[in-house]
Length: 592
Image (tube, rainbow, N blue to C red; front, side):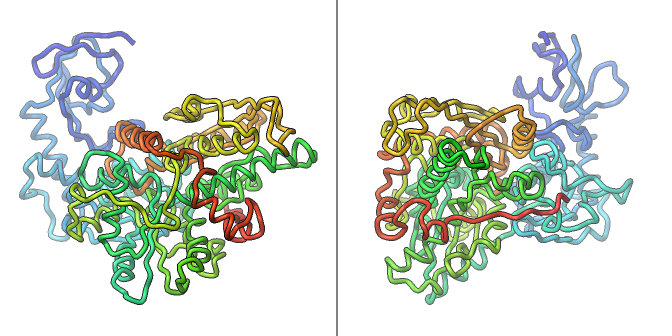
């Protein structure tokens, strides 16, 4: 491509030939409204809200799909353009359920914002009866087709970003709608519950299953002991969800949770460190079995922290289930330890414990209800609320987050390291595991500047790294001397699918693979603030790595509370109690 001259609204600019009018306008700061367009997705050009006028053309054209040509003359704000955009919005609204005050996206809806921008007060196409809410329920995701505008963002998200493709445009003309196989609910198809469709939906047609009501009820019950854990990515999304600049004021989040009434304010980062101890040792013992005992060991070992990814592999690549780490996710490890060891330590009756997770993820709502997640003798985690749900609770309680003091998490299960914080970013689990596994096996710090394993960081879809082991190893791990540990990281299920296919085809060999279902990892999770795009995910990633750098301890095995847990209760990684409480197996599911 090369630069060409174009005229937009009477001024000349340089633009890349072949790029779109919309892209050119964005580059020079001219706002063109969109509904079906999203920067993460292919262009569809089906809503036509982005129409512009091009000199010499007979009709208005959609800016999102019309390429730039030399000397093109464009008007984005002519009377004809404004009238047409308003007409299109009125037609969309005429078939839309406009119960805005009751809608999940009220105040954060792209259609609502455009209606306000184009001063639509009385719709001339308004019909007497509007579509009623038609709610479909699944473990983590709710659908209301009466608020769907057929932008197809959800369809493209499911196909392009996630390679799941369980939703499609179905029917023709007035009967067209977004549907599933045999019109089943999302809980009855191969949906991974990742929630990426929610993050890209411009209206309230898709939203998370709200669990704030039972959490409020538990907080108000004097007989209950309500404990809360907060995932690493929540701390870099909460302020954004509250309309504040993205930062990592973890201490304010702890203060807000305490003011909401939680009896114990604890941290999933604690169990992220615990996951690294178990998963790191699992990797080392698999390598020992393969290299020393010459056993048939399922390698590469693949992480199991992301419930959307777990459901994906159960449906799409269940011939590789044995390659999954047997470790539960940090959320579920936390729940199991909270209702056993923490209760013993604090003198709590586990029957009175209500365990609440604050997660960046809608798939966590599905995960908590899996039948495998009751090894504590109770349901390990009772309720999961997203970052967005916590923000709503804080606002409902009238808490002024910006002016809260910095407070610490409670003890026990509130202490963590920088290795746990970076779980929230793609590559973070891998980096945390390498920091610990390398040091356990060699007795030395991993030889990356400042512990930062840069090859596994960033937003490239699939990342690779090679970590050579030295000639001198710690006692018991001599078999790894001179071995080069080969690892890979993928985020977004389309990238995961591509990586697994290359592994099964013998095109790539690794010892360890990290996979996260969501683009960017948990910081881009289905329960994070809306809107989402690359710039937002970059801001959250910077905040995560800044918190890691700021902490005094940055390796999971240095967490004193983890050391105490093993000394007093678990005794050793991969031991009897660890296997019972912290490990599991997963299930083959139908492909469709």
